[in-house]
Image (tube, rainbow, N blue to C red; front, side, top):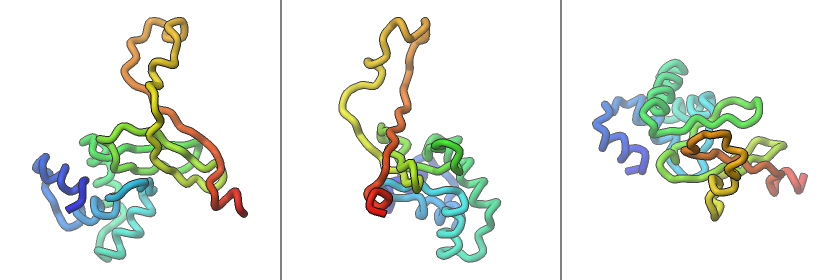
Length: 138
């Protein structure tokens, strides 16, 4: 059973056929699909699943904190099932490919006190941008 499915079962989330298919589509490392991509893959597994059901299920998973909603630039939102593993993202500026990365060090410690403006810092989201090997070779 996938990590996401295990977490959802552990929460007692009612596992309908549609919810299960969405969770299965999202499972894996470096998965950052748009809602339309999730829907297209879900239809391959369960032809009768509707776009609305996919969008509603993604919204529930985000609300539960089991999936992260990732926005990079002005591209479509993507959904990341690695919500419980601290990581940052590496994004190709040309094709939009997103990879999970695990940099060493604490990004919070790199913000000097003079730049915190009295805020109590609770977290940092860092997005690294570059060109992936496929686009660099094109």
